[in-house]
Structure formats: C-alpha cells, structure tokens
Image (cartoon, rainbow, N blue to C red):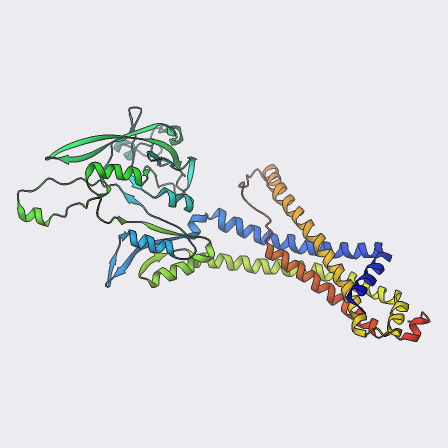
Length: 456
C-alpha cells in the first residue's frame, strides 16, 4: 500500500467526521496555546527585568582596571590594548574615559557654566555601547559635545552647608540642562608661552544631555568631548590631554627630575576602559578570556547567572504546567482514534483481506493522530501570538487605569521566542502520536472475518 494511498485514505476518513475532528483539533490547539502563552510570561519577564530594568549596559559591561606587565600592575592601557579587546569575539564596543588635565572656563551666551571637568570619549564606541541620554543626541560633527545632567547646578555655599535642613531657606531650582541643547559653549584653553599664560578661545555646540545619575548624591557636571575636539585642544597646548607645561626651573637637577607632559605624537594612554559584550550570556566568557591575557577586570556575571537561573527554573515550571494542558487534550485524541478504529472496522478488514501489512494499517492511524496534533499546534501557535500581542497591549493600560502605575514603554509581559514555538509543536505532535498509538495497535489486531461481518 503506497504512502499516497494511505494519505488519501486518512483524508477521506477525516472528512466524514468533521465535527468530531474539529472539536479534537480545537482541544489540542487550546492546550498548545496555553502552553506557549504561559511559558512566554517567563521569557517576557526575564527579557524586561534583566535587559531593561537592570540596564543593558550595566549587565553587559566589563570594567578593565589595567593589566599585569612583568609582574607589575599597570593602570593605563594603550591603543594596542584597546585594539586587542575589540578583537575578542562577541565584544560589541570598547569605551574609555580620559579626563582633560586642565580646567576650562566655560560659558553659554556670556553666562558662566559651573562645569565639573572635561572628559574625552570615543562617541562611535559609545553609540554602540548605548550611551545614556536624557535629551538630545550624540555628537555627529567635529565640534559637538554632550553635557552632564547636573551641569547647571551650582555648588552650595558654606552658609547653606552650615545651616540646618529645618531652618535653611529653600534653594531655588536650577534651569534644566536640556535648555542648553543647540547653544554654543565657549571655553578657554590655557597654555604656557615664554613663561606667560596664554588663553585660546574655542567654541563647540551642545547637542545632548546625559541621563540623570541613579544615585542622588552623584552629580554629573562634566562635558563630554570627542577625539576631534581633543586634538584641537592638544594642538594648542602641544601636550596630551591639554596638560599645561610647567615653567622651566633654573635648577637643572629639579628640571631633569620633573616629568614632562607627553606630546600628542606619543602613544596615548587610556583610563576607565569598559568592554561591552554583545549579550549578557557572553560576559563571563569574555572576562575569563581577557583575564588569561593579564587584563584585570570585573563584571556582574555571577549575579546575573543567579538571576537567569531563577528565570530558567520559572520557565521550566511554566512549560511543565502548560504540558499538562496538552496531556488533557490527548484524552480527546485517544477517544477520537478509538472511535475511528471501531467505525472503520470493515475498511480495516478489507485492507487486511487484500494483503495490507499490519504496519501499513498502524501507520494510517498514527498519521491521522499526527495530523490532528499538527493542525492543533499550528492553530495554537497562531492563537498564542495573538494573545501575546493582546497581553502586551492591554496589561499596561489596565495597570495604569486601576493601579495608577505607568509601565515602561518597552516592557514585555509576554515574549514568544522561536525555541518556545518549536518545543510546543514537538510536545503537541508527540502527545498526539502517543495518544493514537494504542488505537493504531488495536487496529492491526482486528479479525478479518469478524470485521467483514461488522462485528468487532
């Protein structure tokens, strides 16, 4: 008996009992959809809590504190070190923080800006790493900068610090930093020429404001500049990071002992280096790999591993509960296939009379039960995606309406990864075939004579 004949026989018999077949497929679809939607809650919460609420950069960042060279600890790293770190597999970006070694008298529209230092960064790498902004954008041009969230906040005076909180007058709120976006920031670069200080004015455009620090006592009053602005400053001072050369001493011994600033042509050193991984799952491996090369580093991989373990147990439990629903649906498949064997006893007798092998008969009924499971899985998957979209759309509205709490815009209550769909389809199909295996075995044992007399 050809396989095509078996498929045709199954299709004809399935058409005879459309109502019963529909109800069986519907029960299987409901069980499959329940399994997917229930497990998707675990995937969605893990994605939202780990990758969003904790903060993607915090999770995927590896702080590199220096390296071991000849048994000695060296804090600063060179361009070669950064190049190696970028070459490590699954590294998305390598960032650094180099502080300018002179204060700049900054002002906007003639009003002094109480900045807290100037930091040179690689904005291209910061873009990949997800540099946090509260307003504006990251620099795209050569003369654009980002300012700190608290840059317009003045330091409290000694009188304000000494007064008690109960009697101190209310401090007027400073204007938000975002109001400076689009304005010109003027500052002066100082250098020493023939023993006299000389000031060179520079102008840049403010295009962004950093995020508000999560810790209340931290104040971000820095100005973040790119490589182009830094090179202009270094061309003025003739030193790295704008360091001011000290006047020459008449004492030749003191002059020889004094460490002279490096020129911009010399290899640059980098501090506060961070390696950003492609994903949280790669953090531990990258840390171990660079540590073997002598780079001292730290990350929250261990803490993240424990969090992921909790969600893994949660997802396994949800899949287990969802599988119970599919098993309940298997009772309907078993009942449908048992009735099919009884109703088709005469057909089975005819097939056996003309020489059909028992394995072919068993395959027919297993094929039918497998198709029921497949149809149920397909319908269940479609329904589960619809329910997932509905949950992610409706729940934030309900929470905001009844609990008066605003859910983050990118928070996902339900997430259906492809792996979950495959697992649910395999479970549904496997349970359906197992449910039809006993009726299929019974069909192979039908007596030909009794079947032809319609007496099973």
